[in-house]
Length: 185
Image (cartoon, rainbow, N blue to C red; front, side):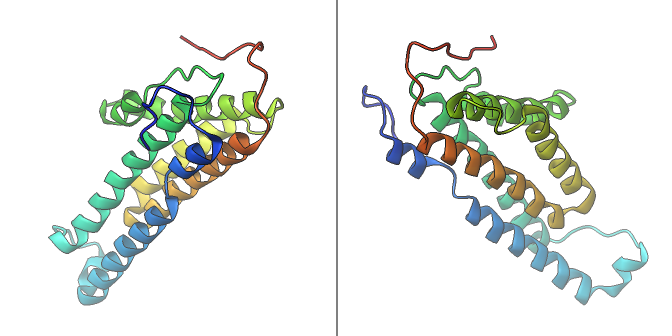
């Protein structure tokens, strides 16, 4: 995923650099299985008794969440190097702004809308609604907060949806470079 050679990356390189969301699905499944095993071994937890999660329960969910941030970063690296497009969000900001309290609520809506704007620009039509893309990621993250490890799968589902649209956009014929380039800053 090193696009620093000076020349514009080829479409095949950019598509190959998109995040591997299937890894997130496997990590989410591992987190869910760990949770299911814990509930099976400790049936009193289902009755509402408070508990401290053991390391084997916390670790898979933590690794899955870290991989989420890696995927968000990689997606924005690809968009940053898309020919003819000036992406308004750096990859570091895309992942890092998730850690700012309260602002992260807005950020979960903001960065997917910018991804959708790229898709619409590249496909030269209204293919992916920025509002719907933003709400999809926001609500999948909210479901993750409510459902715990079971909700991690929904986060990767929303990321998979966005990544597939970016892949389609990258594989479509590029816009001519004389046309307007998006920049919201």
